[in-house]
Image 1 (cartoon, rainbow, N blue to C red):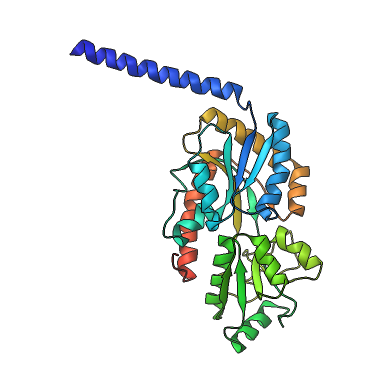
Image 2: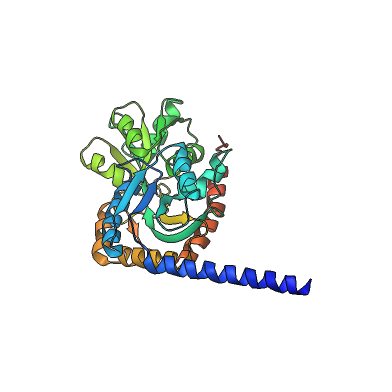
Length: 325
């Protein structure tokens, strides 16, 4: 019996050494083919546009092509589930936001992935601040005027959403300002914004990148940003709190994740290259023009951040009075 036990232990040790050798060999040759970045939002969204810029530089750094797949729908669950069930070899990554990894556990009853257990954190790439925009026909040039109009016309104002940040921002605004708002959900921000510009929906909380060109073109009117302080990206806009809506501080973040179980060497390589890109002053400046406050950190820092954000978004959603769908 003792000799059999020794043989088993030797077999386990040999298997472990083989796995380690295979992992090291894989990391040494990585990447040897195209990498696919899966996005939970449609083309034209803030996440899509900033990812395409970063991916150009990442492709050059890694020496392989970067393929972007937009898998919008189900509040990001389709894309997140797809990556969670992919091989953890570094060739399929999820570029996502607080929608899939902070809010969905408290917005959706049937979640087909676990934002912590099913993913390997790779790198955070920054924040995407949101702003409140209204159709020009809405008789309000300030948040205070919008609140007054909404209270004088209960049920007349509606808000579109194409992400969890938009959903929670709209519900928080309605709850904190004492307004009766109709929620009109969409798969992604671009089609939602189109209906606001078309006058079919009154307003929307949208990332600055997606909304600002239409504000500059006078198709929309911007009233405030959702962060606690003013954003340097649009310094003339007040924060929602500054504009008179109490306890309002909501921001969207962005990061790269792989399936659970990715080799550490591959994660380290990807993290190093993404951080180099994001931290270059000229690229940070380019991303700023796209409405993104770019910065990064280690995989471990992103993992800790995700856990902290889950606690924060549970509170935000509960305070907004949103029930799971």
